[in-house]
Image (cartoon, rainbow, N blue to C red):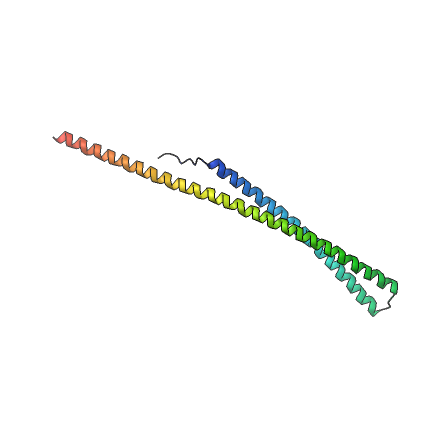
Length: 151
């Protein structure tokens, strides 16, 4: 039996490399998004801490200047949180784009693998047919040799 050689193996190898690269790009972008979300969450926590301080100040002695600084801090935090939300949304869009690219590359690789499987199935079919033909020829030869020896 001869060895199966897929004539488009180099294309399949290329598709696998492209898929690996797309997976790495997706993972990298996911890490960027996670960092941006962590920054946003830290800003939200900081804003909540300032709000808690205001509540505590209102229970005790309240100085107008401290209240004003705390209010300005909350306003600043709201702007920072809004900016960070925009950054998170931007990174999510990029992540969705990377996911789409990865899905497309995976489809292309799977299509190449299906072509390889079909080529291998055809190879097996051809090999079985050749083997069957060889067995028939051998049988015919053996039968013919016995017959000519008996006559």
